[in-house]
Length: 318
Image (cartoon, rainbow, N blue to C red; front, side, top):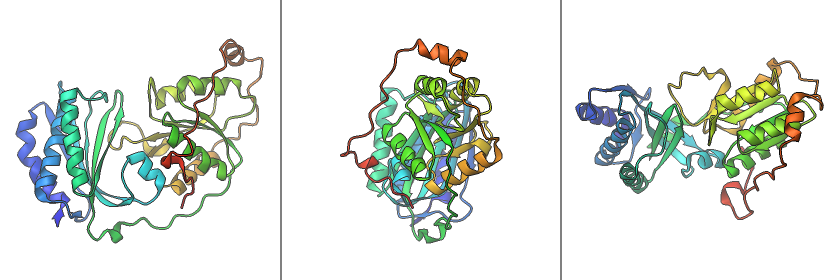
């Protein structure tokens, strides 16, 4: 049994000089011992490889944020977002401030080795890339005596009847979220990317009350999507979802960190909508956005996952 706080800090101290003077390191420990069954040698090797990858992503220099935390992966949405099995974990996260692009093949091989080590320990590795912001890689390691870190019971959010525009490029995640929101009473308009979201926003004849968008959508970003939809739908409330935790430079009030429990999503949406003015006026059909959209060919929305897709098989929540 090892404390991930102590083991990671010792390994990081030994690694500082090898990472180079152009790399600044910030370490954030968990507030209490993060006990894991993973071996000390495996933890140190994981940190060495992930820290080296983070430094390689910042050839001109930058900040490497190393953190230790707890994670309770208790529902299928969290497992889907993180690509990890259900369970209780201590988490070693490495966040760089690089370009957020996929690593070169030589570095990708090292990432595969790190993934194999984590899985051999009974854990997993998840990574999230945000172009222009950086990459966060999380090593999930089995927690020892995890009951103290289990989340408290959460209050159920009230039902809603507003319209939500959901933008998420991963089909299984998009279908899953749409099911959650629909079950709560919301009218959901789903889009796989920025262009499709703009077409929906320009053609939908009724009010759209909230934009729920992922921060990392291929070819765009949550900030860009929010700006474009905001031009078409002035006053729309925006909630961005991000798997990139840590120092992104954006305030937390309208960002929801992935993975999140469904109750947290519904509570945040309800709170934002209750504070926003109700958009009772639909977009006029003779408006400039509608005229522009009319010239666009109709596109068939992406097909949802097949019935055999295990990630979307059970939209039931908590």
